[in-house]
Image 1 (cartoon, rainbow, N blue to C red):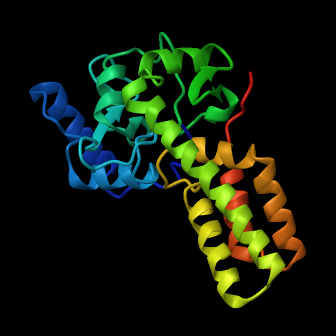
Image 2: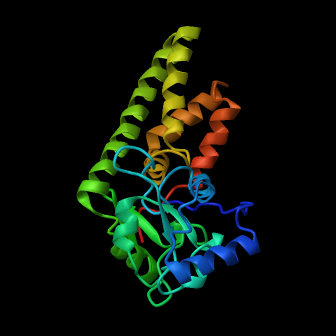
Length: 248
């Protein structure tokens, strides 16, 4: 789970339109949130991922669902309020269901920074406080089939790429040439790409990356050799913002 930015309000959410659609929901139980503009806006703020578990949406078995952070049955006046809508996968939306986040609060990733409330250990999310614990429980974020196994795969990818980058760097240092530099750059690009906010389980990837002493050594040596380019450093810094703690 990462912090997402709700940094715009779509034109769809005019006061008049919101009022009309809210009335339609209350009177006819109309699914007023099932509008293309709403779906596109939610996908945009969520980086095309579930706001809770970070699976990439609109792929096989991970179709976009619109989550009402405050449940629409208990809080009907917020059924089409932009601040109440989040992109979610079927697993998270279904597991959260009609949970009352006012009575028993959970992390709202568009408001709260998940890193303040959860940490990761053995590819499992754990609460740093009551809010984090409730979030993990309500969303079942440690479901083995859906999440833990898949997080392990992502973590293994990061570890493998770091090891491969170390080998490519040593090859370059032993005989600097353009071909070996290209090979090294290819690995670094793939590694950093997986640690950006639009990537699957980016919090896991970013945490694995920045916990690695080998990666830190590779970066330091590439800086010394003047081959750590500005794009790499920008992605490095961006990935730092997604990192989760590894202890409470």
